Each structure stands twice: as structure tokens, then as C-alpha cells.
Image (cartoon, rainbow, N blue to C red; front, side, top):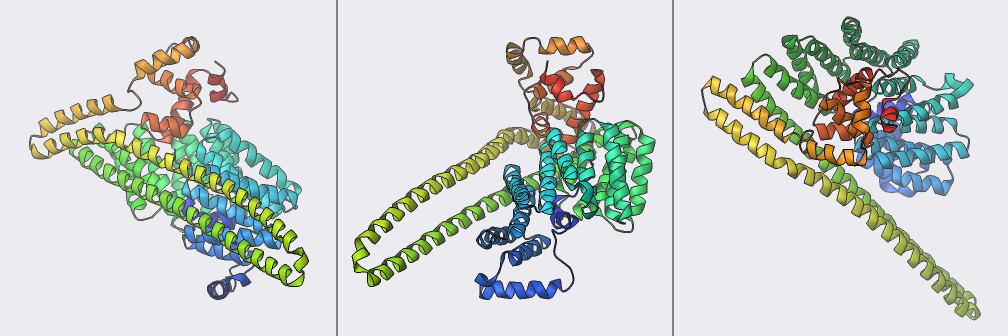
Length: 543
């Protein structure tokens, strides 16, 4: 499902959407040059507001690691200056950056700090921005109920002063959460408000996004004609701005409509257009991988097995490249965080030693009678500082160990698939050497069966079901009593929901996209004859 929110690859634009959170454009270039020169020659002369400005500048240049450095330094300076406005902004900036790194827990932590600063010191714009950031994180994690709760709190906080805030991004984020929960009518209501507010301020990009999201609601509800009307309207409007993300989303959604109608030739055309857009623009790797997966299936549906085979090879290459880049970026982020923490710790130790020496020398010269007392005080402070440093080092080591475990787990997951890919490559190598097209078709069918056997979603299902029923003996019986026509795939998905797995976890287990999982949940809800107000997750958890 390609509902469009403001993507992380354009994070600086999202920050500018929040009033008071950006940098004025007039004379901005000369101001930045002056700050950069001062930072190079004498960084101690920079105040917290200056570091916030430099942070935004680096975010605009997509230099997030450097922006992170300015944010860390700026936070320390803001605490010393007691500049709570700058401190709240810098916390929010770090939250948005950690969303782009995929570190959602850390992002929530910084948004929570920003919210606390805003509430304690009565800075409404900081609270407003922090709550929007938390809503974005919960949407990314698939925790849509939490997203709705915090986003509604943000709108309520604006209250009578809402004219001074950009509420449109809140309504868009709430629409995406509601759409993912299957509450299509409520989602449409929020997307229409998003469109109206965007139109009032003549924000063409936001209007395009709103039209795409409205069309997506109609597509999910199988109202394909109405969905196409909104997609084409968005496509026409996009000609004036050339938003690549919107164009790729529209092409991909149109392809899904034609796939649902069995018009695979048209679907293939739109998928190729979406792929061309994604390849020409950074930050659309998720769309690109979804397009390739769909293209492989569509070629197979029309019997174009050679094209399906070559497309599958391209998909594997692109997926491996994207995974490698993501891992390298995560490792670079962890390494930089560690180095910055080490540098800060060493700096504090050196400064403390210098203060201690100065203090000892001053008191020794001034009053020799106080030497013994001074030594005792210094020793006590040194002992306390040593204990604090040991505790900080312990916490730092625990954090590093946790990150390492995450990396090791990721690598292990990759290794478990090597055997499957090796087997696939062997079959594909045989196909390349065999000119017989009929034999290729037969081999592809065999390959498909092997893939199904290796699929994560089916491996060990009988064993899983046996153990699951021992813990929840009446669960499947209750579901089948609700609708005897539920398929094995339906029962499997319901079992994963019962185990409180997130949408991303289920998609990873079943080897499908998040969109496919959300669509399946919506269909199961219809099969169970649940009302629109009933939450599917809560219903299944209650069985």
C-alpha cells in the first residue's frame, strides 16, 4: 500500500513544515558561511541557536552524520546556556534523524525529551513538533493505535491557536494510521481535511499526496474507477512540480489496480514506469523492490518466463545492494556515536583534572593550613567521579553490546537465506545453458515449487500449529466458528497477530510486503463480519 507521507530522504522539508522549526531563507547563505567560519576558528563562540542553524544546514545537504555532531554539541551548549527553545528544537532534530537511521526507540526517546522541555517551559511549538515526530515513529513501527493517540494529542494541544500551526501533516499521518487499521471512511475524512488545508496554503506537493492517499483508500475498498480518477488527477497536478515519490507511488498503485482486474500487460507498463522513476531518484528503494517483486509475478502470469527470470535476477541484485547500504549506514552511525561519546568522556576527564589541579594549587598558595582539608575534599570528589565514570562506562558497554547483538542477528538472518539463494542460482545457471524454452518453463515451475518449500511463511507450519494449539487450544476453533471458510493462510496470519507480532515482523516471516499484510488483515476483518469500529488486533487478542 503506497500511502504517501513525508519521506525520510526529504527530512529537512518535514522540519520546515513545522512553523518556527526551520531557518529563515533571507541572507541564509551568508549567515551559514559566517557560522561555518566561526565554528572552524573558534567553536566556543557559537551559541545553541547557532548550532541548531548548522544542524539544519547539514540536514538540508543530507549530511546527517555531521548534522548529528552539531546537534550533540548544540545540546550541551543549550544546557549550559539554559536555552530551552534551542534545546527542544535540537532534541526534535535528533529524533527525525534517528527515524532516517531506522533507530525508532532512540527517536522516540529524543521526541519525548523535546516534549518534556516544551511542556515544562511552555514552548508550544516544541510540544507540537515532538508529538508529530512520535506519531511518525509509531506509524513506521506499525503501531497505529499509538500513532493516532499521540497525533490527536498534538492537534488538541494546538487548540484555539491552531492557525499558527501546520495541522495538515497531522491529518495526513492520522489518515495513514486509520487506513492501515482498515478504517477507510475515517481515513478518507482525514485525507480530505489534509487536502483542504494544503489547498488553502497552495501547497501543491501536499495536495498531490492527499489525492494519492484518497485514491489509495478507494483502491483498498475495491472502488477501482474512483481510485483511478484520483490517481490521474494527482498525476496531472504533479506535472508542475515533478515529485518523484508521488509519481512512483501513483504508477505502482495503478499497477495494483490492473493486477486485481487481471490486466497484467497494463500493470507491467505502469510498473516499468515506476521502476524508471525510482532508479532516477535516491530514497525510493522500498518502492523499487516492491515494483520488481510485482513485475516478476506479472511476467509469470502472462507466461513471459524469460522476462520473469531476468527481472528476478535484477531484483536479487538490487535487494542485496540496498541491504548492504543499510547495514553500512547503521554501522557508521553506531561507530560515530561511540566515538563521540568517547570524546566527550575524555574531554570531561581532562577538564575535571585541570579544575582539580588549579583548585589545589590556589588553595595551597593561599592557605597552607587548609591543605589537608583540601586534599581530603579532592580525594572524595575524585572517588565520586571515578564511581560515576565506571557507571557511565558500564551503561555505554551495555548499549554497545545491544547494538552488536542486533547486527549479529541481522547477519545470521542473512546467512540462513544463503542456502536458498545458492540452490536458486544453481537452477538458474542450468537454465542459462539450456536453449530449450519448454525445458526452461518446466524448470521455472520446479523452481517455484522449491521456493514455496523454502518460504519462511510455510516452513514448519504444522509444527508451529501443533505447539500453538497447546498454548491456545481453542483459538482456531473459535475463528472457524466465526467463519468456517477461513483459509490456512488466514489462520496463520491470525495466529501471528495473536502472538502480538508487528506488521513488519509478519511481513518478514511471510516474505511479503507490509502492504500485502495490511490488505490481508482488511480482508480477514471482512470475512469475520467485524464492524468498522472493531479493532481486528484487539478482537483476535481477546479470543
